[in-house]
Length: 103
Image (cartoon, rainbow, N blue to C red):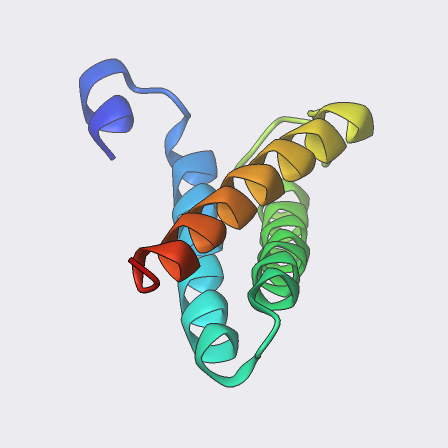
């Protein structure tokens, strides 16, 4: 939000799409995280579901003519790299959290 308000980037329609993706991610993660014993499964599921929602909404906005961009503008390889890095950070945080109670 701060980036959009201060620099106008990303453009407003994409800002709405990205905000929606973040809300879906948070909702799915909190919903699955409390019920799933394997926390990484919940994390990866939240990313997958939020990305699906992101591309559906972005595709709709492109089809309506409010956004003039390709549907997939970030290379698949770059998205996989980001996923691996985020999963590594998530696992590290989960490991630190589980060891904090053992002290």
